[in-house]
Length: 491
Image 1: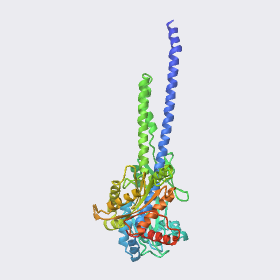
Image 2: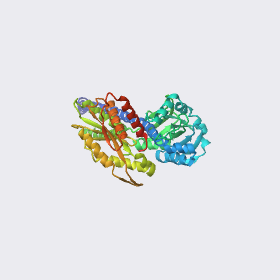
Image 3: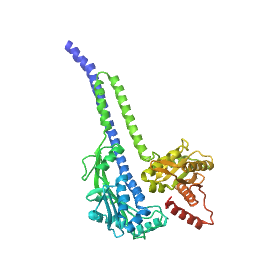
Image 4: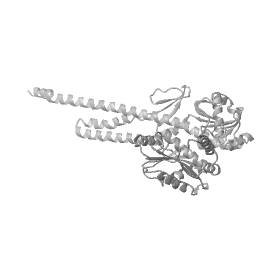
């Protein structure tokens, strides 16, 4: 009888409870496994996106470095006069110390190596002749008719796009980011004859040093460059412009979902005894994990939209804010303004006090401007010595004009730097929406127009965009061309 009662209890009560409990646990375990897989997949996708942006940022930084070093009146003079030591110090050693370029070369117009610097030290110019010869497609591009026309336009000041060949390739048998740029005049006063310019080559090797930088900067675990495709989804191909795979960037994926399941397992086992407690612990663990993931995403989003030197917003943030305002701005005038700023005499700071002083100056400029802005205003560093401000919620043109004058007054005050005291100025172009423009492209173009007019009118001043009279387009075109040339001249 006792055995029957035990069997009956087991069959009628205990077994259903065990089955239901088992199904519940299996369902919960399945849900956790599915959630962990989804979280891990999202984390892997985020890491891939971060590293794709990191590689693109390397290209952008290489372009900026080339524009800073190759477009230099003194570099043209040093190449013409054969001043090898100046070229070594300023285009070789400095490129390694400041930008981390592993190799730097200066070639004459006949593509003969004049200067070779490897990891900050001068080496015989002919030592890398074979590797340089393999860059023939780069030189062919820069010697094409289109590139020669672009060089001519750059020399004449009618284009601010630096003619350049930049791509991932193999250099000395290693995957690398290579940029080849003609050595041009910044002011245009000693511009070499088209087709007779020398060339400046920068090489950033894709090796352990760059991988370590990616790991520190983007919080990626154990990144490394490999020659062969690794057996893992946590990998990214390094492609050249022709779509050929040169190397693979791989890393140790983060697995936040697996960590979440591992943390929840003790609570899951305890649920066999105290179900309510385990649910609470699981929810708390899940909540903590979600907050952590959200924090990581926000941090990655912040890095993608802000300038690492000044902490200000970058072009991505500028485009995003501008698009939002244009989309939600009613058609009455004016509602918001865009101020484009270009520092005057900034290059003199770099040339006389050094690039470190230039960086200090950019940070101080950002600080001074921010002190004049409202909480809803957005300050952007577009790159180099160019800034922009988005000023929403304005009633008329007087508000951005008042802000522009305040910025001019603030930035013309002397700045104490570690290397000495410097004084700069600023030219500002203003355009408003929607009274002047209803599209992002027009608004930026009008602000550029106003900026060029401000520079052409004497600099250290602001100009509000106004359309040219219909009867004088030729004169305006000439003025804009002159202003464009002046913008490239020494500040």
